[in-house]
Length: 488
Image 1: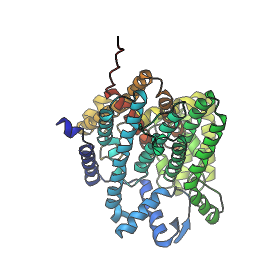
Image 2: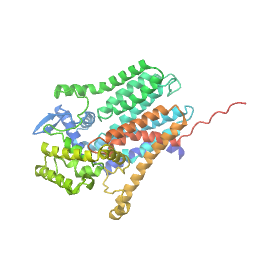
Image 3: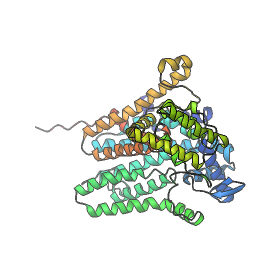
Image 4: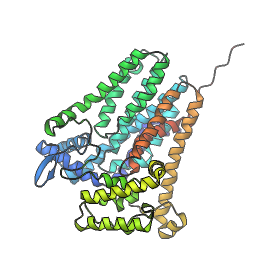
């Protein structure tokens, strides 16, 4: 039995079954799904990366091209498009997600060997692989046509590259194998691979370069301490160039088609003719921190009426302020269009709220968003309406949904707790892995801070950090090599 559970094939088979269960039982879509499918279909059939507007296919840059390219590839192979091809899209995503499990296990092994190169890593590899294969929070995303599966996979690959790069930046380096194997033991190979994989990840998610930011903080510290200024400059140049290579065709397309040199999607993805709701978003940032509030307000914008009585009470500092918002929404609800006048009115309220409670906007709401996106049951893709709190009230209302929600909430805490505990243990085990652990933690912090600034706090965006939690958590189950005794 022990041999069976230590087999990577068996772990991947169980992981495949779990993901196939989600695909067959709980297939899902989101607001972005239809947009991605339309982009891919038009790209494949009409050779235009665009959407249908007023009866014509209009070139746009509202999304990065990586995921539409994947959809277009599946469409070309299957001869199907849109909803009829979703099952095949999901099967492809299962394969990518299982590959992410393997890469995560490799990251765990690298961290383990950095602390003790003489130990046997099979146990750590197996534990990390099982934790990845059985993680329900990543396993259910192959069942929805979104970028998350590719974001997790490409982030995990980049993390492995940067872990090796940081380890090799120290004097003496870290050999992944004992022999002089170029791919495993060459600093510049890992630098090139790191930059290139970040570029590939950026084709799917525009915030992927946060990995470069984290590495750009840790690497200079290590290299400057060794007075390696020349190598630092060359490393930064190589990382930047290799990152831009995958993005080059996209930037050239934008320059020729849209007459703008744009490597990333615009910060605010609006369609031609739409205004950027700066005032509305500024108002949201003074009170919105839960995903459920997005369904009540921002995701209705320009599509559905917004009822002031459905907005949480924390959005208003006084009854007079609520009346002002109600009057603004009354104008909006007349034609379901956010005009500049309405947006400016929201902006004025946002400025007043921020002036009266500056810490709320700058600190407390972002902190609440960070807690919300990290400590959540992650049931967005499941047909469950349960809430964790208040426990007694939710249990009386819908006991089955609430019990399952609490189970996932506790399981999420376990994964986060394992990652934190594993980081502490690895940090104290040896000085060798500390720069890499610092890099991993720094990336989590940077990504979390960045996500708190977005218009909507969606918990799915932290899934790219789960390979770190799992790789660190697997260290708790490691068996270190016995220290040799000195001969008398």
